[in-house]
Length: 450
Image (cartoon, rainbow, N blue to C red):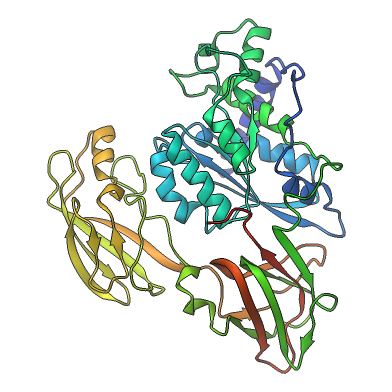
């Protein structure tokens, strides 16, 4: 049975490829002046990877159901083919039905902890929340962002030169604006198609539409070796051990400006070192902790809470909220929270701001998703429904050098992430007879101030 399943899966890939090949290819774009703009740090890392020095590139696809349709896999496969010596770390954290007013809340456990090199983004929703989302990501990470314009699910009004607030946002925050909408229109007209021919309903893509979305992005992601590097060369800086920084008496020190620092291992000893940021362990910096995405709602499976914050520094522990006594539309219910270390930490009502007894958990009324799940899913939540999440450290108090089995590859360990984007002092203090083998330290400095 397993062999049959594998064979059928392979056949599906072959048939899928054959079907894709039957679609007419898009004609060359009328205007390619924006192709590759504002994400050349990522493209440079791909293009300069070699068999002797492979770079790791982190790609995040984020948005709603349009992004979650699976077409991103075709884009990643194309990048892997074009840049075979790059090691890709890819995530698609799209949430169908979550507009910009929702994603501006969920980004704190979806985008910030992942810390992508490049984020491909599309969402519908209020423009002000869209801008807030972009500003937060650009001020909390060094991610380059490709903002995709809408596809043409109807024949659009205006012209390709008509101003849009989203293109203005892209320009304001140094993001790339992919003019997908009018290239989509060109494709429809070139092939005598109607917008509905690429859709499975009023807005969502069918197989042809997913293929076209991937094709338009694939050709947009070009390497521009002659493009000025001014806008990105100072956002991520690598300090080579033995060249830029040195171990002295079992200690490696670096003063840096940024909010994230990563160690790259070198072949050699697997010894350990204590990590200190401004004289304290990373775990002593509350800003270096994150809440994970909470478990899903009972019907749709959306994160049951859009955002969780704290008033007192959280502990690294697991949390559980038990929800009961839902009213008909689920705008009202009661809940209690309990931490694996904190223990029982209070009860609350969905319609009121909740601050746990310890102050380690704060939930605003707008961040519960049960009413949305009830409205869309048409099913009530069971009484006593549980929501779970964790508090994790974005870093480590003790660096242990991983085993380097391929010297050409990067072996990164996050030492601290989520720091204030200011000046910091890092110290690695060897705890064994010899310091751990380190190739470099990489510092990340977001380009937009907060």
